[in-house]
Image 1 (cartoon, protein in one colour):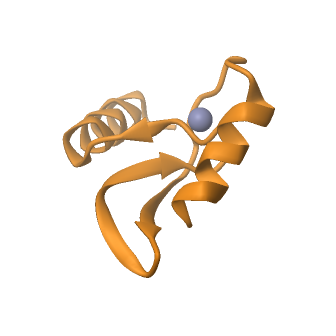
Image 2 (cartoon, rainbow, N blue to C red; image 1 turned 30 degrees about the vertical axis):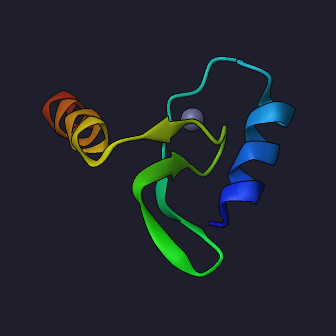
Length: 62
Ligand SMILES: [Zn+2]
């Protein structure tokens, strides 16, 4: 997802509750940044944070 697009999502989502069901790598002008963004709310995550969320989700078995 383009960085600008993520920012727009974030604005439109307006800090509502989100379970962050999916992540996408974020890039800017064709170059990948290190972060991931939630495809629903546009929140930014580091690779470590993303892995942590996925790990918790796995343990819950959902
Ligand atoms: Zn989210």
